[in-house]
Image (tube, rainbow, N blue to C red):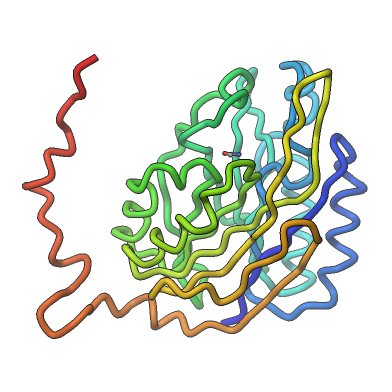
Amino acid sequence: MNIGYYQSHPVFGEVSKNIDQFAAQLGSVNCELLVLPELAFTGYQFVSQDEVLNLSEPVPEGPTTQKCVELARQHGTHLVVGLPEREGDQCYNSAIVVGPSGFVGRYRKTHLFFEETLFFAPGNSGIHVWDIGQARIGVMICFDWYYPEVARSLALQGADILCHPSNLVLPNCPDAMVTRSLENRVFSVTANRIGQEARGGKPPLTFIGKSEVVSPKGKILHRAPIDQEELMVLEVDVDEARNKSINPYNDLLKDRRPEMYGIDVKREA
Ligand code: ACM
C-alpha cells in the first residue's frame, strides 16, 4: 500500500488558492492514502472568533469537504485533511476522511492546544477507526500526541495506521511519534506544515516541518526537512502492523493488564 503526506506552506485565509496548489501536485503521485496537515487550507493563527466562524464549514456539506471528495474520486485515493468545522455556532478543529466512494468520516480534535482553546470547542466525536479496504486507519490531530491514550485507543480498535494531521510548533513530536508507533506496533503518518504566522501583533509561530512516516517497529521511514514543502509517498506492508507478537512469550496488546493501571484514579487538585 502506498501512503504518504503533504507537507505544505499555506497562506492564511487563502483557502481556494491553498486547495488549488495541493490539487495541482496531486496528479504527480500514485497513492492510496495521503495525510494533510491540521487546518490544512485555512492557516492556523486565528485572531478572533469571527475569523474562525467565517473560515469554518459544515462537514460534509461544506466546500472544502466536497472539493476533497472530488479530488479523492479523481485520483482514486483516500485523503485525511484538517479543517475548521462549524456546527451551529460551535467550531471544532476537525479532520475529515474522504475516499473514492465519498465522505468516510470526521474526527474532532480531543486535546486543544494553546489559543485553540479560545476559538474551538473540545472535540466530542470520540476516537475512531475506519476500514478503508487496504488498511484500518485512525485519526488524531497534532497535540493529541501528548496523550498516549489516543494512539492506544486507536490501536486497541484495530488501527494499522495513525493518521496525524499537525501544525507543530514544539520540537518534541516527531521523535515522540516513534514511541507512539513502537508502543502500539502501528504505522504513523504525521503531516505537518512549514513557515511562520504572526497575525494581529501576536508573537510569531514557527512551524517545524519534519513530517514523517514511522514503521510499527519505530523506524523513521522518511522524515521531511524543516523548511520545504514536500509531497511524499512510500510503500508499506500493512501486515507489519497486524503482528503484535514481540517474541514467543509477549504479545503487545494481549499482555496489557488494565486492572493494574488504576487509569480511572482521579488526580488530587
Ligand atoms: C498543535 O496541537 N497544533 C500543536
